Length: 279
Image (cartoon, rainbow, N blue to C red):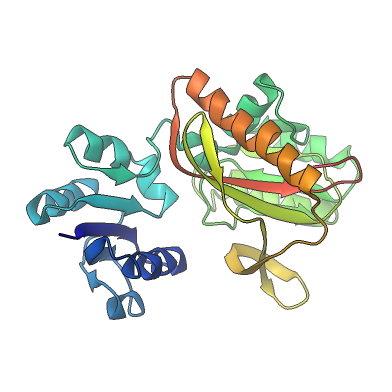
């Protein structure tokens, strides 16, 4: 008998997950919570918010769900994987502690600094005036990142002081994304690429490299989004680059998190750049 699967979320990511699952001969039925109109053509959508952990758990227990696949980071940050596993439910997704590598840029930077994983130099701020003074004394462009979840919209590449001040005001004074810190990074040059992998504990299984495009408008203009499109087959990445990124960044991060007592179990996303000095 095929498996009963619950997919948590209602965006393009979850649509792609549902579509892939629907092609598996091992899957008998798929539910998606909350889903969307497109997903409804492939799965039964149920009106439960992706952050309603207790509601989702009750549904999974009632329906005898064999596997739950969690899409949104917010659900993972709220501990959906912890709650499901405690109830004896199989779930694909990181624990709340492990998901901090995605939900907190400062935490991720601290892990990378501690374990010698390549990353841009940075400083974190909670005070607007201190952050503005620091940015003012440095060359532009400036890379400003809201520390918490921001649906892919929390990174600003400020071309000048006016843009930097506006972004810092949004993040620290107006709490556009909620209360939190801002991470200011060194600006690096080179093409960006994404290296995702399945991960469990200290072991990773790599996916094909891709380059995703986040800006809202044509010509790489406008604010960042969660993603406007992506392609694979990156001619600017050599096999040496790929091997280095897998071993020295992704595998190193997975092993570091396991050492820290919060092993990963799900998907690890590496947002990387090939600079003149390497990956």
